[in-house]
Length: 118
Image (cartoon, rainbow, N blue to C red):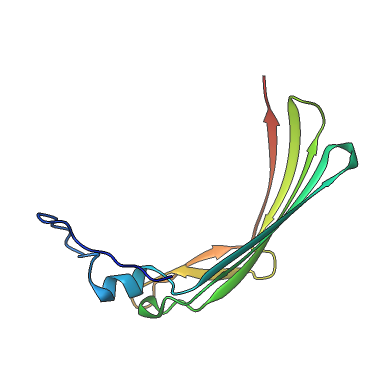
């Protein structure tokens, strides 16, 4: 990812997002995303998502990969139940940092979702 950010005349952001240091801190150089969805009989759908994100060297955040999985079962036109697992192969991964000793991590998570459409 190559960003070309420029401040408009009169812009007074104290962080100055247009400078090279801010760009290297805020955005990874490379990102990739792959998603596959499989529709099965009986209203079942499986979706797998794989993401690869490059390092944020200015924030001491290493590159990482994540895998998410969603299983959905549509019981009727109006009712659907889903189970989701995120960040399945790591207990957590750093996602944002900057201040020494402060890195925000994304933990592995699981949740269920119920959708009812009227």
